[in-house]
Image (cartoon, rainbow, N blue to C red):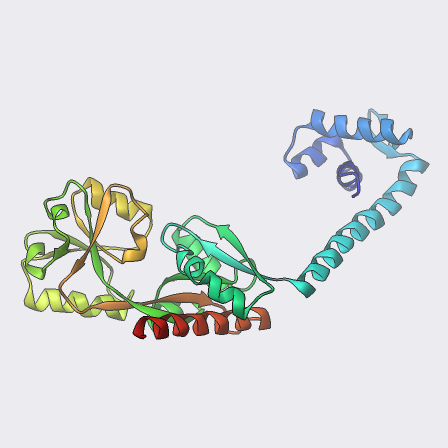
Length: 304
């Protein structure tokens, strides 16, 4: 492809000096000068006349300036055409993944998905699970990331401006430190939580969590509810460091090595599935239908 020093050359021309070009490129002025010197040496051309008043383009420099813009754009267009050609034979689904949004559910379905979408490939795109990223990624699904696996409900979908394909209803569980007194149990009763600090997402984050919250508030006042605002590693650290109990789902069992996730003898569940754009592309729509069919086949096999 083209020599990247051409972009530095164009930046110097537009900026009018090495120092201003360095500021735009976020590198040092000596680094800019070195790139220009190497470019002149490789081309055996003098591109600039250095004066105490600044830089002056030589005739060779003026000619290269015109052609460099064309060369760079042509190379970028050629890469785009090559990628488009690849897409004609292979559909790529970009899956966002973080500790709270693991892609394991799709890995488990992969053999079936290959039957329904033989030309589809996965591209895993890791991201940091922060409030800012959650707003940006979920609000713009289909641009850099196509689908994200996670828990959701209509409240969250409306808040994040995305859609969801429900794959299962996951039991609402509790996570505790492996050093917590409850970690010795394999399953909890509601009474086991008496006297504990139970971390729940703030009200109106999820209708399903609010149902659990109201039940505890009304019927089990011995459980102290601690509100928090966002599920990230910090919330899991808070659970472990403060010896609290954290509302969780079994898909998060690998988020924190010092926490154990336990089922509770209550009937509260929350939807789990794939978050996607409200109007997915044809490729993503075919993929979602394949996932839906693969899940149905899996359930059918379990019943046989």
